[in-house]
Length: 158
Image (cartoon, rainbow, N blue to C red):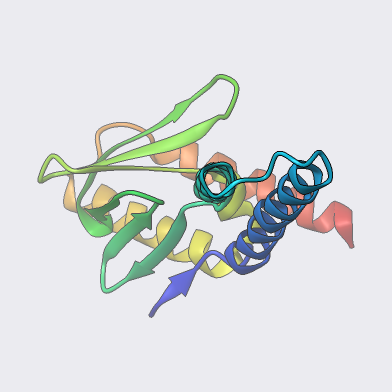
């Protein structure tokens, strides 16, 4: 079964809209000030492209036992059925870090799991497979807690 983050498309659209709005406003203001030149237009375009890369969230996909997180510059994949560790990094932007038996790791936003029940369920199933196989040493309860919190939040929203 293939699962994806349901929020990605709308968040990518919002990020692209913000980047285009930034480009349009900067070009308009620079033109109104009479200082718009080709190098300045290229600078504003480059800054808008950087803004787009920052605002578009990573794309998360779980298919055929592999969890793939594709960001603006790189793609990382772990074997979801051979997880060794699941950790939650706290801070300004809390995220999950999953390590597999091959030494690969991915980082993902726990809100993506909360927003996508199919993705969350498939990841839970993969965590259970890793526990049964004996590879998961750390973090099995963390995924279960995140799933309970997401379910409770969904029930409050009803």
